[in-house]
Image (cartoon, rainbow, N blue to C red):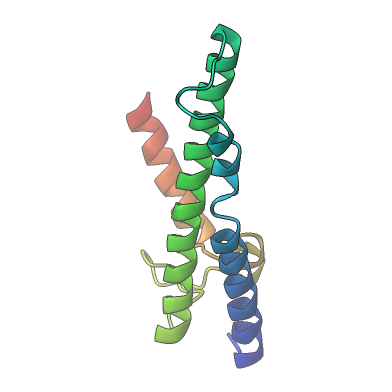
Length: 121
């Protein structure tokens, strides 16, 4: 992969990471509106619990995405970006454009998902 393309991917990944880090507290903004002594009926409590679960889910996903982005940036630094971590083939520009944090080529990714489906059943 040429240097210009790598720089473009680095910029995109860094921008995505900044967005995730800057917006990291957004899921919890609504949760802070309710104090422990605020009167709530059953519907309010259920809604509040749903908000908490959703907030935690979003926080977890964002945290995981930040880790994936950091890993991709490290692979750029190490000269391994765009190389499948299992078979060492090229991941492919189209796949990287769709998922810049991809560590596997499409063939290895499909094989991995097939194995996971077999064990999940």
